[in-house]
Image (tube, rainbow, N blue to C red):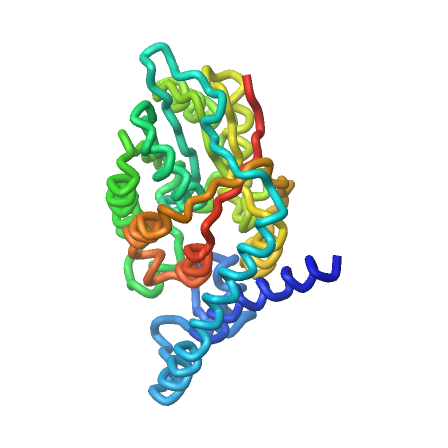
Amino acid sequence: MKRTASVIRALFYLHICPLLLHISPPLTGGDQGESDYFQSTNHPHPGHPPSQGEGNSNETVLNLLLPLITALVIFLTAFVAKAETPTGSLLDGLAPGPDGKIDVLTIFPHQDDEFYAGGTLLKMKQDPRVRIHIACLTLGDKSDARFWLHVDPDTLGRVRSGELVSAAAVYNAMEVIQLDYHDQGLKGADQAELDRKILDIINRTGAEVVITHDPSGLTRHPDHVFGSAAVTRAFPQSNAKRLYYATQPEWIYLPTSTITPFHEKGKHLKPTIKIDISDYLLLKRLAVYEHVSQARFSLVGLTVEQSLLVPYEWFSLGMEK
């Protein structure tokens, strides 16, 4: 128990350290969740950059600490993962469809959310029977990147939808399906209509496997929580065979869900399988970097950067037919 607590504490500081080193004064507007986060943690707005001296000092400290942070993340990942969830494949024991193909469909709310399963998609695509479909529920138009880039939500939505197409090319996905809900809009969306749209996507793609967030949403973002709930409701009515939730072990989930500016509640699921993606980390990084607005102009990029060091992805089997 003490060893587990120590690992959790260490990972907490590993996640939050880049935030403390990179950022400083407050946002003056935007979404309430983002605004509260910036104000409470003294993060910067693009219009208030740090002074030259402060920037140089932060950069020096960061350059000194990054090798140590990287080594610690790799060490702790190997140390904790060794005795935990069994390694396997999401396709184990799964029969292909009538055409001899296995269609895998990811359904996430935002354009960069597929990174939770990115290495797994790349690994599965080595099987010539696998076809990948990527569905995105919202336009991602309320990301904090719009403040840094000085663009309106409509422009950011177009940019992010284009970024997802580029990332899908890295995954060699068969198609990208983009719905037009607004970012942070799934909580207030018509539930029956959302469920019908998701059911239609599952059946139209002929998916055998569906992947979405676990019920907690991992970051407690309302779109993650309500998107997961909608997929969960639609799946039993579909022709798909397995529903997997992208999840995380407690030592990653706890710091991630602690530093998030969002507070939507949902049950965090313990992983039932982990995928070794060590051979696909560089390609996963490439796919994530296709989401340039998030990787380079959003706080999301600071936290995602740490996860790109982890050679595993975790899932929980939600339903199987």
